[in-house]
Image 1 (cartoon, helix red, strand yellow):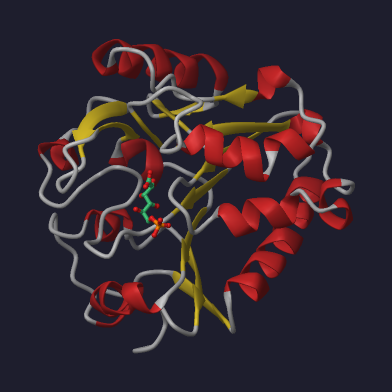
Image 2 (image 1 turned 90 degrees about the vertical axis):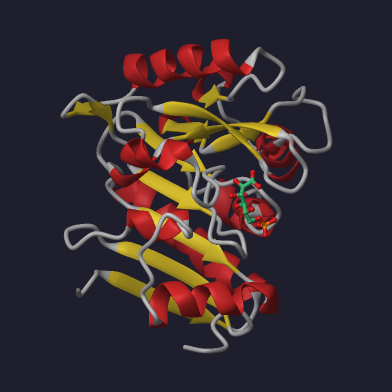
Length: 243
Ligand code: 6PG
């Protein structure tokens, strides 16, 4: 099956992040909506991209009042914990830009996960445009684990077949850490999806997804592929080694 995959390969994470920051500036400038809903990726890869957005040459060109940030997943920790995806974005971007605090829609990792998935689902339903009962993000940024997970949807999770909930509770297989993750239906519903994947350690999973095209619950990221969804891959030469 031919999926719409736009693959951009950059020399290194710096060049990738610089180019993506330029794309982000243009995206916000060209979007005439009063509110633009962006879903942020967690983990370590996107840190450098967020730091580029915080540079004067990019941040001063972005009308932050229009931009609303949400998170694709969060670790079940407090917002000042070193594992927090919110804290990672706060340090690399939010503390350096003039964005209204009401535009920051973090997942409350400190809450009971069972309560938080309900609260956050309502926050999504109350703030985003809805299509076929599912909120639509203007742009979703995602990372990729070397096991094929994305957001905090892990291999062979029962949540991969969950078509009813917008947010789910997951458990990181190695650490046992509880996570809150957006589910596949809401990720798939986005207008635009971009994966940021760098480093030699991701080369094998990139090969499985983009060369072997293994679409399976073993690789949750692969379940986002569809004929009518254009997915953009921002890779560096190390993660794109086999392409
Ligand atoms: C998280 C992310 C997760 C991440 C991948 C890749 O909370 O960890 O949402 O999906 O994107 O695990 O992580 P790295 O960017 O650190 O390799």
